[in-house]
Image (cartoon, rainbow, N blue to C red; front, side):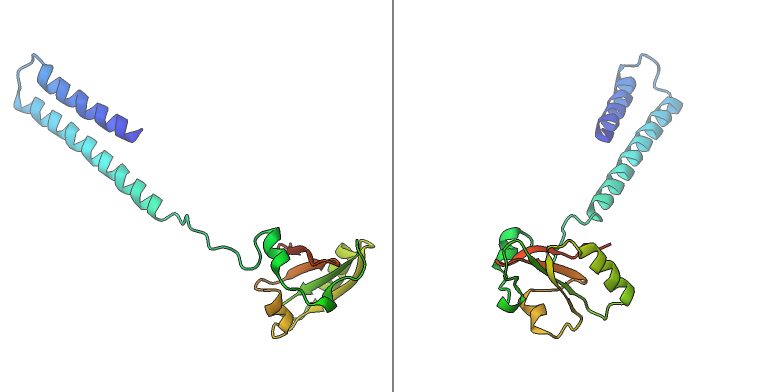
Length: 158
């Protein structure tokens, strides 16, 4: 849009300079040159601001760690001892990088108390093998496991 206005302004300035039947007085020529310089400065300012603004926008996002799709979540090798034994029942594990407060545990227990959770486990030691096996890189991460594997995995906890 700015290019259109700039082009129109330049065209109008030259059209006025060339088609005018007025005498080309020095004052008139100075006015036309000032108008041309103003339009050029405005266009260059707009161009610089646009290019620097676009260059500063980070359009590249690093992928979030851990599985991104259900297929990737299914491909994680879950240790058998963590899986639920019964279909339709779940074992839920909360992976933290520091000890949970009692208030946090109580709130999570209340949220996850659906009657379908057989076991709620807490892992607070990032040195455990489970963190590497399940590719835990964000905290807290909550993983719900059924008898087949990962049913839910999230780090989005408010």
